[in-house]
Amino acid sequence: MSAKNGSIKLVAGNSNPALAQAIAEWLNLPLAKASVRRFADNEIFVEILENVRGSDAFIIQSTSFPANDHLMELLIITDAMRRSSARRITAVIPYFGYARQDRKVGSRAPISAKLVANMITHAGVDRVMTLDLHAAQIQGFFDIPTDNLFASPVMVRDIKERFDLGNVLVVSPDVGGVVRARGLAKRINTPLAIIDKRRERAGESEVMNVIGDCAGYTCILVDDIVDSGGTLVNAADALLANGAKEVYAYISHGVLSGGAAARIAGSKLKELVITDSILPTEAVRNAANIRTLSLASLIGEAIGRTASEESVSSLFD
Image (cartoon, rainbow, N blue to C red; front, side):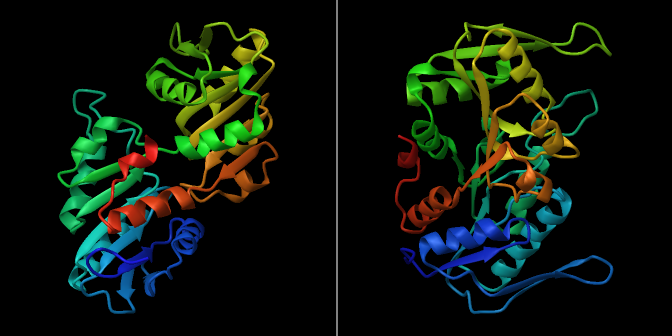
């Protein structure tokens, strides 16, 4: 595969080398030779070890934990590619860290997602490709073209292969995720329910009210991020208490920090399905009820279409 103007160069940071390699294999292209390492004081050093002049460059780097290190890697790789005369630089960010800081939550709070967008733009990125942004308006934080891909085609394919859709109910774990859950329910033609999550008083546990009839259904919780896993575990308990047959969860980004993997493993969730937008930890890989879907074909196809100046949005029609 080649770009419309110049050759394609795929450059991988250290955040998710397995996904970068899978994307390269899907495109039948090698990863560009590059060294991304640290000095003794932990400063990041990048050296591009092959000619990239005039190329259509794609830097594959999630800004997942440790978010600041991986963000700096992305910025420094971008600077190295720009100074090496790459024709166009696209930052492929399967998981966009800081996305949950998309608005002011207090009088003197930052909007860190906008700050990070500015940093990426000013480093010299010409285009951004990301996946399932926590808030759609983050696309507008960038002053450069930004493609927000969706993991739903990958999830829909998996759901259709594994479930009897006549007995499936898609559930949003909170009111804020209704649009995302409704979109998936529409794709597989199933009903929708919503969890109304509230904390009556500070220090008291969450109360989960199920809006919709889930009795006898196999419920699929849908969301963009699972971090601590507490909301998913509580939502599964509430659905089962209301008569659900089994509860599964399909989540785009498995942040799963701290003891989240153990919490999921010990819960009543039948299975948590995440994508490989974030490199799974050993605890996640060893959890019996956590499974990972590959994004390599989806992102690879989007990269190929971008390089050949074809439509990316038609992937999700």
